[in-house]
Amino acid sequence: MDLLLLEKTLLGLFAAAIVAIAVSKLRGKRFRLPPGPLPVPIFGNWLQVGDDLNHRNLTDLAKRFGDILLLRMGQRNLVVVSSPDLSKEVLHTQGVEFGSRTRNVVFDIFTGKGQDMVFTVYGEHWRKMRRIMTVPFFTNKVVQQYREGWEAEAAAVVEDVKKNPAAAREGIVLRRRLQMMMYNNMYRIMFDRRFDSEDDPLFVKLKALNGERSRLAQSFDYNYGDFIPILRPFLRGYLKICKEVKERRLQLFKDYFVDERKKLASVKRMDNEGLKCAMDHILEAQQKGEINEDNVLYIVENINVAAIETTLWSIEWGIAELVNHPQIQRKLREEIDAVLGPGVPVTEPELYKLPYLQAVIKETLRLRMAIPLLVPHMNLHDAKLGGYDIPAESKILVNAWWLANNPAHWKKPEEFRPERFLEEEAKVEANGNDFRYLPFGVGRRSCPGIILALPILGVTIGQLVQNFELLPPPGQSKLDTTEKGGQFSLHILKHSTIVLKPRSF
Image (cartoon, rainbow, N blue to C red; front, side, top):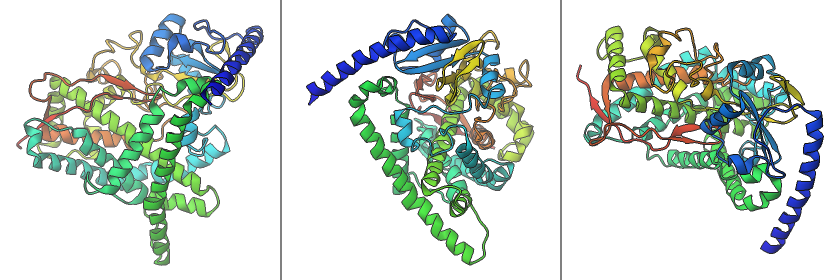
């Protein structure tokens, strides 16, 4: 059987080589393509650049080939954009032309081939899903409705750490407790639910399945089968695991959360009570026939990944940078004490009074951008960009990390220096008002979660710095901030042990 598969693969590769050479010659006559390394038949540039298409490797390529470059990854065209002007063209000026999403073999599995909001193509389905998700999740009204809950969750983290004597001595892996906090923040909005303990069996199961989904989706290990379809049979085992994880996750969402909310919602309607959480609104849209049950489950899938994980990564990066820069941590603590008063909790309404805290968050999102290449864009039809022809269905990557870390545009970008957002870059905001700084993207396909992420980041980091001195573990002078990149993500490789010494007020 293996020999037969090998024989078919070799024949397929030979046929693909002939087709690739012919197509390449035809396209060379028709298109003025962006510069890039010389591709070879079948493999394109894959053998030259490898699978690991992270923000730093793509930055190195941009330094060689320019602000727009083309990589032929097997049968896929990948266009990398690395300048503010070209980013504006992709995300804003030609936002419709480049407004679709490209997926890969694994994301097709986890999103039901784009039945969600994040990875669906630009069109009627995306507009409908965006509208249905905006009202219950992404408005100022939602922030005001749930901000006291977020403040309570951050305060609960503070109290749990104070009760743990190990935290002040050898230190703890704070991320574990922050992870439950983030689940509670979002599950309050989604289902009016929360978890009381990290040992809750349902929370443990949910966290494990989401973690496995993230590992499988973010890995570069499956790229070869995505780039070169003839090699896809070798991915059968990998894709089988992805399908099993996807089915188990969606079933868990359905059995323990969506169906439970359906029962509660029906009782509340009988009692003439109002709608209470996001899922009530989403289920109402399903009852009206606007979306189906699969769409409901994929909305839950999106929130579990896009809202929980990315914000958690940013909190973890922010804390690590504050541990490694004690003078910045001290300056932030002094601001909080001076503005609010010692021991007065940091709350959402007071965040605007704390400019240095806001600058710390902006600087974290600049240097340690959670989605450094943004979520990939795609043009459904042939398009023009920067004077070049972009073939239809090209994957467009905006290297947002390099936009925010290019020394041509930023003073000493390698330094963690929040002061830059109070001095030379005082007018730069995270909402995309400056195309050098796009942590949440901008335009039609920007991340709507910015309205939730910024206050959660402010309240959480503010309360931790206010209540504790954050230190590396005994015997270490700094935390290890080695990066781990994925298909889209940037998170810290090692979840650090942190010493948290309580302050006395």
